[in-house]
Length: 296
Image (cartoon, rainbow, N blue to C red; front, top):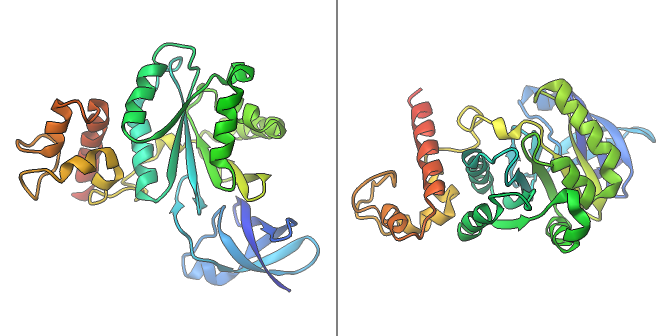
């Protein structure tokens, strides 16, 4: 019997597919996918044949709206980037790299600044709100005092396929537990997998937290090589920074790189304080990284 479903977990060549009625089947994929160099991904909407009460066989992958190599996932609606205001201090270049990857791939971004009771939170919040990025400040360890912020995050994730990404020590697990108490044991398992795999785990899993709401974790995503994984291109870099792109239209030269040229609308906007310098610094670093990669 044929049915439609969503891949919620992929481990090697075995896929857990949630049927439209909520039942999960362990599925293999048809051999033609391998010959055609097509890999089913967590988040894919698929057609599959139900073989028996527990297993099935994926026959077709429905069109994707986006996909990423790491995490190996498709049809991502929202990337939740979790940083700490300090301890550890945030790496704004990695943060800007991830927002650029998300924008380039048509994925919305929510920035969650954890440990907001420590130094630096207000300045980080100011930078990213001014740059047009949806931002929430919270202290996950004191979740009772931030019930309104937790509810705001739940509303932003409701009905979406979301992945949470954050470096070690930022409090991502505490945040997930505060948002979704039923995930408490599961996130512990995820953390152990990350530790054992040293960012090479092949398991990408989504957890259903309500009707059409799926939450996933992204081990090692912050270390992604944007050029090596084709997650971002030199040609697409500018519109991956919408806060910078809008000022590029005022450049004197049509071939302006928006890095340091005289007459550049972006450089003039920085001087006026309308573009955050840290954001432009990240743009320049990514530009040089992508340009160097393109030579080879």
